Image (cartoon, rainbow, N blue to C red; front, side):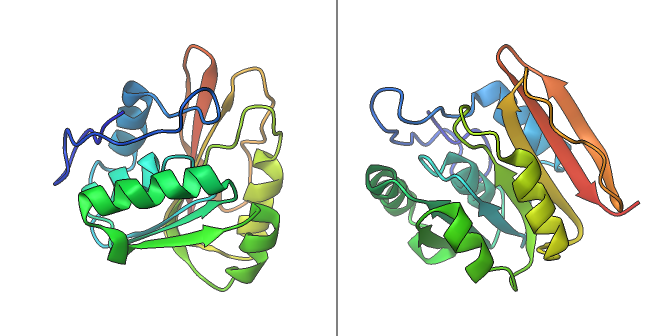
Length: 182
């Protein structure tokens, strides 16, 4: 796995061995970031299921000023720290160890410009997390929620005050990008 664009372009990232995480494929990442405007200058991102940290690190490479990552697995946290260290972005990264159900309420006063939701495919939590983010006004005006989930899952795409920026099917997944604002 690698960073695909920005100042850390082509830099390799470590991942967890085996099938413990499911990294977002390069062509899916490219579609996501192209839809977000490619470069995220001075934005603050939140990745609710960090894995290797690839989406947050890609965001920092493309100009985000700060990236928050929630991750509960100790091994994944080690990989995220290793990747951040190799890129020299430890200062821009805020690691939030723990289960998202405990961490999100602790940071609900924070506003994010982009929120990434890419949970393990067995979890059916996209709708609940999007509802929590919206109810607690955690996404800035014109901000985005980016969700990747199994294409057979039924996910709500209609939220008052939000529009669908992108909904695209891939081999085994679907990517939904919601943008705040009418």
